[in-house]
Amino acid sequence: MPMKSKPSATALIAVLTALAWPAYASGLGDFSAGYASLLQKNYARAIEQFSGAIASGELRPANLALAHHYRGAEYLKTGRDDEAIADLDRAIALNPTLYTAFYDRGLALSHKGEHARAIADYSEAIRLHPDLHYLYLHRGRSYAATNRYEEAVADYKMALYYRPKSVPSLVALGDAHWQQGRNQEALAAYRQAMRLKGDLLKAYPGLVAKLAALEGGDRIVLDE
Image (cartoon, rainbow, N blue to C red; front, top):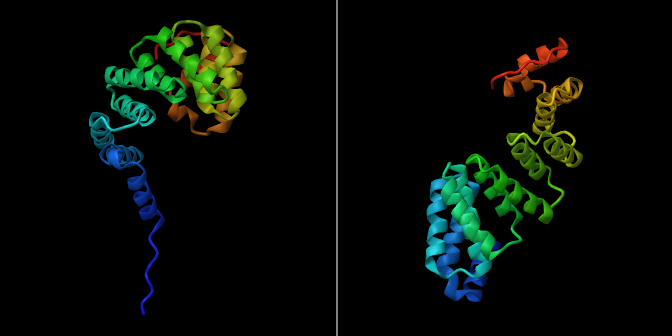
């Protein structure tokens, strides 16, 4: 008598999900499909699927918050900042502990030049999850964009505390010191970044003239 094959783990999960949430199958199906598209970087498809999940009216509040969050993140990746902000507003209203929603909304606000609001969002993300270097890096960039260089330097140093080999944080730190006329500190940060990333000048071509000026003991103003 032939042996019956055992169901796969995926199949078991699908059955258990259907049994546990029979009334949520359509909304959860779109949600799961949207997340799969997100991982595949198919942003347009992910937006369509998360929209279907949201429109279904079937998601529980926790999943609805995530659907708005993920759709907002996809809007952000495609340059649709206003739509991203609207979705992230809704996600945060449903679940104010989603630190990544605050971070993503901060990014969207930064893109729009609304740095004061962006700083507030990055600060809340840091309060919720204080050990992530990129939160300090991006808040520092918003501080720098508003000429608050001391606060920017403090944030870049915190980013480096949590990720000592973060090349973007070292370059940003060098830039902030540069803007303050702290030549030696700027040069030290840039040199450390170059030790970590040999092709740094390809990624940051604006550093060529800065390094030439700093190593020559000058301080010049560059348009970048």
